[in-house]
Length: 87
Image (cartoon, rainbow, N blue to C red; front, side, top):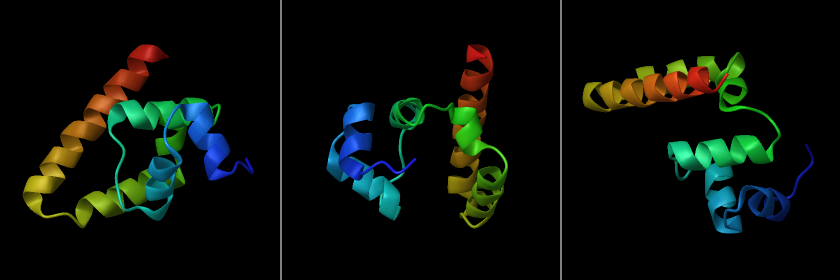
C-alpha cells in the first residue's frame, strides 16, 4: 500500500517500534495486534492468512518443535474461528 511504518503505526494505533519489529520478524503479533494491522491495511485477518501466506504459515509451523507446533495450531484455529464468526 506504500505506507510508511509511521503511517501504518498511526492507522493501527500501534507504536512505530512495534511495526518495525513485525516487519523484521523479530516479534510475532498476538491476535489483537494482528487484527489491528489487518484493519489498518483495510483488509481482514483471513485475507492476510490466505493463499501464499497460508503456505508460509504451514512452512513455519512444520519447522517448529512439536510443543510449539501444537501451540501454533491452537492459535491458528482460534484465529480462524474468530474470523469465520465475524464474516
